[in-house]
Amino acid sequence: MYGMTIRAPLNGDSVAARESITPMNKPRSIIVWMVLTIIAIGLAAYWDDQRESAAALDDFAHEQVTLARAAARTLDVAGTPATLRSIEEPGSVLVLVSGPTGLLTTEGTPTTSPAIEDAIRHGATSTRLSRPEAAALGLPARTAMAGVAMSGHTTVVVVATAFKERDREVRAQWRLALSFLFCSAVVLAFGTLALRKQRKELELAHELAVAEAIRERDTRLVRADKLATLGALGIGIAHEVSTPLGVIVGRAEQLSSRVTGDERAARAVAAISEQADRIGKIIRALLNLARGGDATLERVRPNTIVSDAIELVQHRFDQEGVTLSQRIEPDLRSISCDAKLFTQVVVNLLLNACDACTSGGHVELIVSAKGEHVSFSVLDDGDGISEDAAARATEPFFTTKAAGRGTGLGLAIANEIVGHHHGKLHIASRGDGHRGTEARVDIKGLT
Image 1: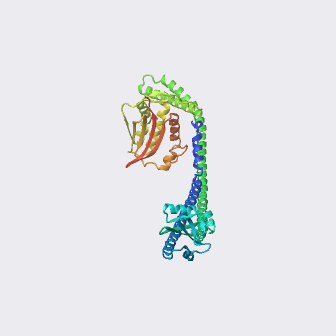
Image 2 (image 1 turned 90 degrees about the vertical axis):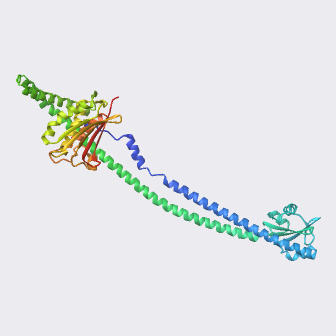
Image 3 (image 1 turned 180 degrees about the vertical axis):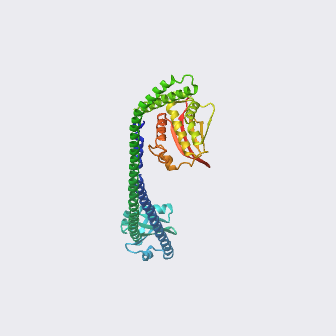
């Protein structure tokens, strides 16, 4: 009766499914962290190397200052620069004396050095000579350090090449480079292992997501197949019922003329005609929905739906020995619905609740405001419903009733009718210490 209203998965569902199986962008972040770690190690090692190199040159300069001071004291005692030659080491240590005529070697040969002369003018105790300046003084073309000390009116300068220190620094740099390469290799190795492990995890997650998507698709297909079967079955039943229903209506019309004067019989015949007409309207409305048409909407008061539904099911409750009560909030909004179809929804919920109760049980129908919606809640005190059964309750042909007592179509039909009215059907165990099940329909109220 409503199988033609099968809804295909929305585009948003397929997009969400694709997004759910798209691997996350974690590998890129791991690579970035690996690169940053390697750069941080390199910068830290370079800074430490430069600090150690500067400290070594400072120590070397201090040694030259100490040597220059010793040479100055020797000059004070001996009084001639020639006595300072014992301090010199050819190609390694050079002693200069600064007098009124400028810089002189211990042999009295004039020489120049802008760096040394600038240090003397500014009163510095040490200075650093570049490679060209060191070579101009006859030392190896390597960095040199000069220590400066005063001896009376004469300045003694001890210049020593730092090639040994620089060679040690070069070796240290090579060790640093090898250490850096080793650390980088370790980082890359662990990063590669992490990437491989993560890739496997992502592939597994992808496979699980694909499997879940396939399972959901198969579930949708099974439901769609059931709905299609139900639709075809409903249309066939409606077609077959229409003929005997016409016979019933005809016979009721014939009887109506024969029971004149018998008020009780007249009421019975009128009830037959009225209910037959109701069945016909419901069948036509369901056929219209099955063919893709829209429900015939009208403005209806909630209490009208309730009174019509209770009138239709009261005899069933009396027969089963189940009490039925109602509670309707005052001043509820009207709803826009097909009154016959929506009443059938409430009837189906009430009959399900009645079947869930034993003799002496109780069912309550509550109509209340829920925000801008009107809620029709049917509560019973039966055994309740499991979460799995509640999730499948609106599936066509699914039922928890004993064989012969249920077809699994009532809630499925109710759910489709509610969906056509843009409402929601909720089924769950009552909880909060209450025994039984709650079936609730929420439909937007009119302003």
